[in-house]
Length: 113
Length: 114
Image (tube, rainbow over all chains, first blue to last red; front, side, top):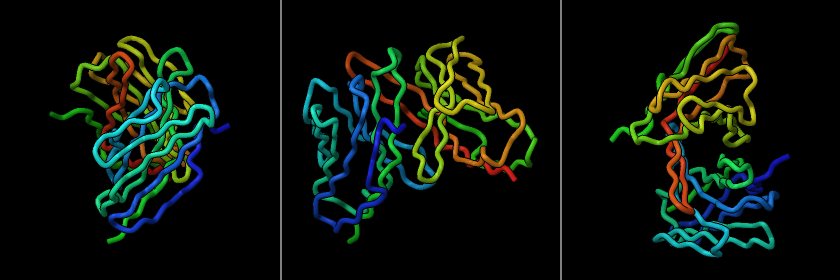
């Protein structure tokens, strides 16, 4: 049973427009959420995170929104750039007493010039 | 500033062969992890070590063993490789602070089992 779901395997956006990547979770014990970015042949790198006590966190072009009642979070990238083309993983933690991250399957973002 | 270093980067094994994937981190983190990434499956936790001297199973531990050699090093062993273990393996270490955490990943080991 998937506890973290990224229902869109891929997303295509034009350069300069907004990219919105979505993530849903089922476990109400999750209280911390992260987004990771992964380029081919590299390890995932941390992008941005949000605690369940917040509903929004911004870092430059990246903003993560959390809707706890809907168990939904989204990553907004504005404006999108070709270098943002990568696989984005949503991850969640907090349910096990000891923190291990549970990852979604990822969304491949392609930003075209 | 090496971060998390994994070796080897690539490996081809025959079914039944054994091998050990090495991982070391230089960030003085207590916790370390092994994940595998398969197409369409995301990142799945194999084993983790909350601190030196402890290890625990993750979501997909069957066919693997781990050793937390010291605070820096966490190795993953395949005793008898199977084609189902063809995957990309990532080691990670965890930084945490009050209310914040993140994993730092190595660059991965691409393993093919024929």
